[in-house]
Amino acid sequence: MVKNKFKETFMRAVFFTAACICILAVILICFFVFSNALPAIKEIGVANFLLGTVWKPLNNKFGIFPMIIGSIYVTAGAIIIGVPIGILCAVFLVKYCPKGLYSVFKPAVDLLAGIPSVVYGFFALVVIVPVMRDLFGNGKSVLTASVLLAIMILPTVISVCESSLRSVESSFYEGALALGATQERAVFGV
Image 1 (cartoon, rainbow, N blue to C red):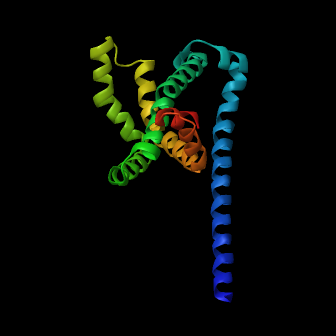
Image 2: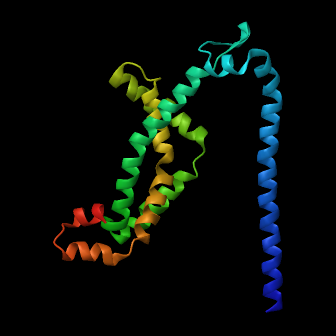
Image 3: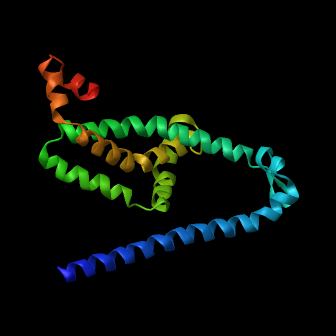
């Protein structure tokens, strides 16, 4: 009993130390970035930096407003594309997927979360960009970036939705079926 208590205390200290190191690393990264960026922003001006529309570093023009708007567009597009697909995949895994397929699909979804973003980017350059170029005439667009980001967020959306769906008591689902709801209506309503 004493040995288990020691192990637990020791591991708690190890995890606490690891968490503190991670927090310190993030703080140091932020300090490094801001300490190097502040002199430039001070010289340019915060308003010109945030609201400027021209990015020409060789001409000392550092407006990042188009980059901010582009990031918002890509993020919104990824949410519009990825969230419905992720929710539907989670519903399939929880309510419709046979056990044999679940044992294949769930590890595959978890494996997607471990793929580095560089690999996703290479996949986009090799596969998504040519497809978008053939379909729309321009492969390097906000839509292409949104599709890639939607693929990247799928594992997280699927996992969160799946755990949320599994936490709903089955009596709610069974009650909806008992009241005459179809299986689909019971799944999406409950």
